[in-house]
Amino acid sequence: MSDHSNNCVEVELRPFKHQVGGHTCVLELTRSTICKPYVEREAWFYENEPEELKDFTPKYLGETYVTCDIQNDRKFLVARVTSEIASRDGPARAENHHEPVQHSAYNPCVKKRRKRPHSDSISGLEAWSSTCIDRQINQYGFWANNQPQKFIILENLVCDYERPCLMDLKMGVRKYGPDDETEEKRKLLEDRYALSTSATLGFRLCGSQVYKPKINVYTFHDKYFGRALDPEGAIKELMQFFHNGVELRVDVIRQVVSKLESLQSALMSQKRIFFNSASLLIIYDGKTNRCSTCKSCSKDLSLDTKNENSSTKLSDEIVHDLSNLDTSSAIATCSDTSQVKSDNNDKPFCEKCFDKETKTTKVDVRVIDFANVTENMVSKDGVENIADDTIVYGLMKLKEILAQILKDNESV
Image: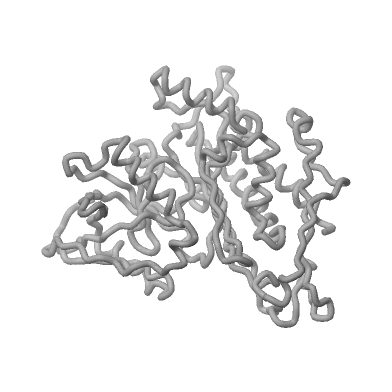
């Protein structure tokens, strides 16, 4: 980016507390913007992105350079950005204390941000992001000799969510990308592919966080957890992601399936970009007005997941591994049946916490991480293998699994 002193400010960055996957750091720039290390192929994608995909990717806002100053074991990360980017947010919600700290280009002293609310620290948010920052410094040599590092600026997809629940899935059936040229790197990725659900399902879990409203905490799983899952474990983890500790959020799953359909159509319709692999980010707001937040309704909640008449049915090549998997999950009911009401989805509410104006839960599905894209390719026989040889295969499997979960729970 151009550096005009009259049009730029310096902003102190912080770890992006809702980063759940990846091996490089994601930093929060302002409430509605984040930044991540620059990768030439990814920057190329954003600059040449097909119109068909723009509703399914983060908005690209340019580039910046980030410096790191370590004082008394604290890392001060600073980016120089235009005033337009620094001021694009409205007032942050007071409870989150997300106001960007800015200072003039003529005053290099970075002001400290306010301390975060205690609730953030006890929930374990930011742990993965902070781990990735340390990895950038210790393993990849970022900011060695005080050298600034180039980053790209993207929109923060979860800035308007109150309790964002996220799952990062590595999509793709190709074992390595176009830039993975060394034999050692290819062997590593081949083994990782073969030993994970990437080989059978076309995707694997790279990280997740789920808000549990009944106990007011997040649960978190990282990429190492995801690599160890077999197909049955991956499907169970999908169910856990859509389960808030009280009920399975079938309303969210329905929206996700619909958005996956739209994404698949967009990927199939564009002919310019070929995805060797990418990450799929599933997001929904875990804040709910259901009975899980009402003390009088949550005291006798029970979840029965031992319905012997229900099993997950998937494609023939993996059905033998999953024939005994149960995806039914009873919905929690209010202990005081005299107070129970139901909404349009036949979910229980009591008089105390029933909200006639409850809106549809905010849900989003986006493709992120474009370090392994190329201009479109065709197979040796001249036929494009988009459905079988890209991230579309994993999307189809994911839809199949979620559709089966919905089917097993439609009468619950």
